[in-house]
Image 1: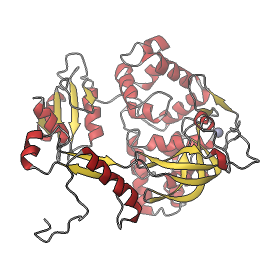
Image 2: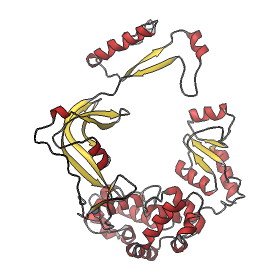
Image 3: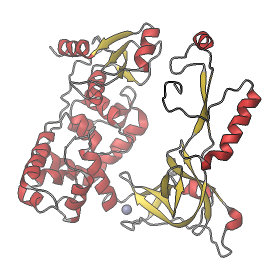
Image 4: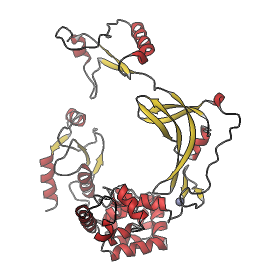
Length: 427
Ligand SMILES: [Zn+2]
């Protein structure tokens, strides 16, 4: 390439022994900061085409080259504050706020401390000098405290006892490390709950981003998810940066969500332990929300892959009088409570028990819609191809999964074949 006049890195070198590789790495590790470009490692390649062919490749990588990655960069900084934020389920999470520091190409001033146990195990205190690194070269993390630089008057950090937003007392539930605010009226939780309710896999209401939700809350136009269905054009027009056109669009999106199949609503309510998949299974089993609410714990726990934790969580949730009021409000607002997804997920569906993998880009539907449909048919959708895979549905730009499926002789369909099967199944 150099002979052809292409720019190549002149620092390449032919080495013949592991000791020579090591010496090369050591030299560049020492020079790394002086290089006029950033590097995160060094690649070693076999420079013989015959040997390259003999060595071949695994599914993912050639066997004749390997990357040596430098250990993560570290940078010292000082912890100035610890902020506590309240999530949708009331989990209160600490974040360290530190003096800004350059680390592996970005300016870092915040790092999650995950939970009180983590914070206490590392004994992180205000004023501490800490060493930061990036986990997986992306997420800043406090590696450790530099204890010998700790100020003399340093005190162990006091974990808060009350919610930073609503001041309700915080609790540690028996089975978990997280600290929680259990106040169902906690503003932080309601705001997060609204964002979850409108999100794509829940009610999928387009245009209700965090800035709009924040304003709706601050202006007291919405105090719970049912409130979204009472919004008027005049109210939306009072919001910052919302014109008539986008307000109308929003109202249409909200209105359309009334027709969603009920598993979206169930997931959107944000009940602890009830994820998208559980919501789907539950609604497929019980048919509508009132029937699920009336079911007893044993009946719910008996549903395939549900179990006692989800059953108990649902019963606790629906027993709450505030929740019952909310459900009534949603019903009055005309939100659909019935499961609408294809009800052909009977045991004799041709999809029942099949393991399916989706890969590449689908052009006529989103991957999550495809997944939802397959699961409704009784198929199991997994993330990687193995001998147990029955079918790979490959969209555009399918990569390594397609190669693997072909290698394992797994049946492969393109999107058109999949669509034809969908039409067939819903006839
Ligand atoms: Zn709170």
